[in-house]
Image 1 (cartoon, rainbow, N blue to C red):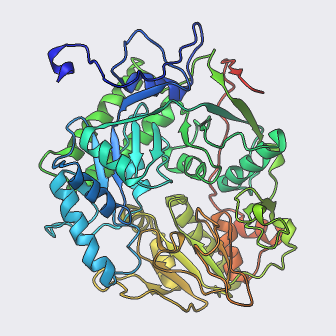
Image 2: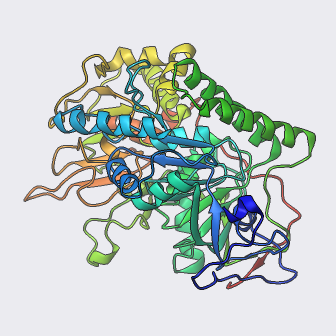
Length: 549
């Protein structure tokens, strides 16, 4: 009310902490917080440690915590989405694998509530469009159409590669939906840059894992923990860059922000715009024409960058960082695997995501009971890698046989549609022993697996572990996010289940061999494959300051 009347807002509460350092520039996240700050003078610059109330642009609710968010909204007597929120989405991805009695009772109720509240919903309560079980993080990454945006989502992997995103509890998500605002301290930032060049046989997932390993070697302690990672991977499109920003949850960072080059950001925004248009054509837009509004925001941002009026966000040359990490790509010469290290004598070092091992560590004799390609960590290029590897093996061996089950779950339906148009889905269907059927979804979780290729419904699938899991005691090699005890696979009385995390080509080859490959087998298998590549941006002239190192 005060804002509308042009009056100063006087609070009965203590003043928020405001930290401002004269003549000090801003990191990218400090710039975003200052641009979105509410209730502060526009001529005042706030730095890390300041408490700030900020406008929230994009809000996401997922289907396991969404019911609690709905209860929070009801308790607040909130009935409609805040008008200053650009986009809000309710997913159905965490309950996509198994349409059991619990999901049938809860999910429609949730979708109906959120649709009435003003969100775009993965499932249409009116039944007009096909149920979309797309992974929430991939959808949020698509509907984030401004690199200056702040995103709040009910999941720790809310870590978009455009703007800055924060995973939050159901109450914070409810507040963001109802008010279009959130209050939090501006986090400290760790800058990550890259030198050298990727080897031809390496995949970007290996770079992501190696970043954690090289950081720990450089600093001893995890300098990422509780801070924002400002990662300079500006030559990667948002889909591919998300593999890094998503993994920052496993790096224990609070959030991540991707510094993109102008041309790359334009291409990413054009892809996002076109995917939003597909959502509109499917009938997913609401009465407020939220999706149409996002397309207008995307067009405006694209034009701003093209004209030079407002280039892609960059930190100031005199920004101050908590620490700076430099990743040497030349040191990464074999696939890197995140290992739960289940037999470590120090139990505090088990299931940490900090044990990163080269594939040679396993001497090509680590038995693999199941492979999983899926989760928010993969993009279309990963599913294309599966198809390309099957074609290559078919040419060299005449056929493809699996010595372990391989479960493939595309994160979104639009990826499957694009793969069909590009001719890659056909080879996957050829070798699949199971393909999802939306007209007759599974009503019970799979408990036994055969040595075949499973094409599962888009969604979280094995990664979440709340519906389906691998067989107890299995050793799983997966592209997913978590390697925690009991998540993807549980223990038996005699054998500890373990989930190791690796790149898509390593997972596919391991399922075919029934074990981890040696480096020679791996190089041969990926020859001619379009792996996700990364070339560091041109050396920036910006010289920043590190506060603590």
